[in-house]
Image: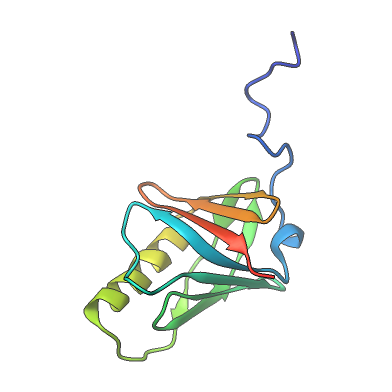
Length: 126
């Protein structure tokens, strides 16, 4: 069958756009590639082209664009609160993931951001 084309965009069909995530909050449910610090979660808040991320220590924020299935964030700024080494490392890992040109997918209320060796899955927080 010609419609059994494996190349059409993944499972959801259409690529994610900024409009798809704008004004929505997501909270991590699973992280593959590193273990979240016990008792913490990653929250991602998309708003009018900006992203704000909190992983239990500093708030990180930046401007984002979505190009096809790639999340493009040039740089993440951060508040500079002191926190434990584990939390600081977690902030760094998330910043690295988000600025590495990861793929982004949205399936209903489930957001997945996948980098080279880390994948973050988050559910919409209503």
